[in-house]
Length: 160
Length: 160
Length: 81
Length: 81
Image: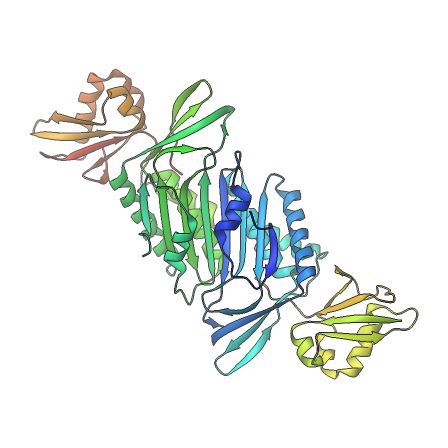
């Protein structure tokens, strides 16, 4: 059985089931581009020990649905799988996995990049970084799905 | 045991072992971008039935080594795995798998895209397309690794 | 009338709870709930300009009117990915 | 003096073989081997301007001198990926 295309939760992430979910049986898709975000052992000069991800899970799923709808509007034939992990992650573990399939590679790269940019802008997910000497909540973007400037930024980065 | 980072041969491709090969134990890499090329059921109006890939395998490995060296020159911290399949592939099967890991995502997307562009330019691999009503050898680029204009094209597409 | 307030990340740490029940008056908005909380938890003040909010699992503006039983969420700047 | 010639894709189909042994004269280049083959297989002519060549597993220009025992490969335009 294939996993749901959009997901968030504590289970470790793996690309293979997501690739299977969107590309199995695909006959007209020639390109699959995937992104994995991994926990790094350092961040702005701090030695990171592990990360705990907090999320407002049901709103995150709705944000992922919104991202999927935006991608469907911009790249109509694209198929998307997008999963984010929550809870404690060790160095090297994957926090987010995104897989996009399209007919041609330019669109797959662009849509996959767009997806991760939008996750970072609007997904209600927070990184609690535990580093040598302390811990800190990372605070990035003020989430506003209707902020058209942010959305244009994501599209610009993805489609440059 | 991890697979070699560069490979060509008839075995079916899978992303997971390649991701494992370049990202396992990685502590400073935050982004992994992967590309899979799949056999599509149509091409310029022809209904494709299957593809047979021919390759000059030892020269292909050297071409992949060259691509890896170019990527190491342009994105010094990037790690690359690149495998191409040969022989008969059915619709939906993967012909090429590329995985790139870097510290940050922009570089991972760029280096992964660069790799596939260069594969298409200089890898001694040929697609024999069997379609409804006939078959044809697909002929794309005259392979010339020293063609700086082609290389610049690949870099422009990757880093736009 | 009461609403459920959901707090995340550092807002949860400041409040010491991820879920609160609070009474609301007629005409309450997300902003009025926030102002009440900011009186209760002075450290919330620093998020005045950077929080996002949601009502019943939809992002919503601060001037949005709320009703009995709503779930209001306050979201510090996000950092997923 | 002899060289091994490797042919791929449509060139192999035209020649009916992927590997040939051919004699070479002193001063032979990749280009002279190609010209000999093009006399033998007239359909090679259409690839005159689009082939690439390699000697002993390195891409090489057509004017490259070759030696006894070399492996010369002729590569039609590639289409991997």
